[in-house]
Image 1 (cartoon, rainbow, N blue to C red):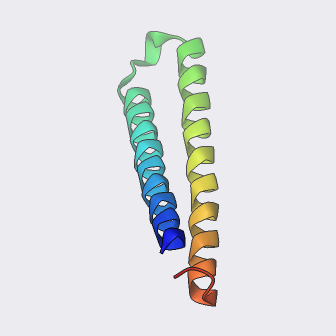
Image 2 (image 1 turned 60 degrees about the vertical axis):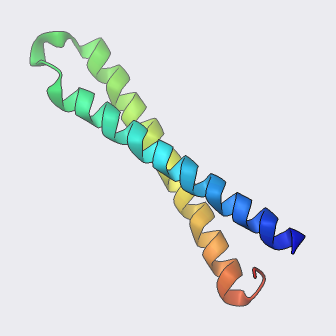
Length: 78
């Protein structure tokens, strides 16, 4: 029973991190889309880097979801 509680907490944390990463990506992408063209290359580059960082976070979370799914299917979880 203790393992199930631990697994549930891990899954809830993963969902929260997934939601936060997606929200960061949406917010930065929105800033990038609404930024005027004459705002300067530096801020545009900074926003591009933030978009890439958010996408990297999402990709890492995707791999973690795939690992949990594989564990569940193989019977190692629950």
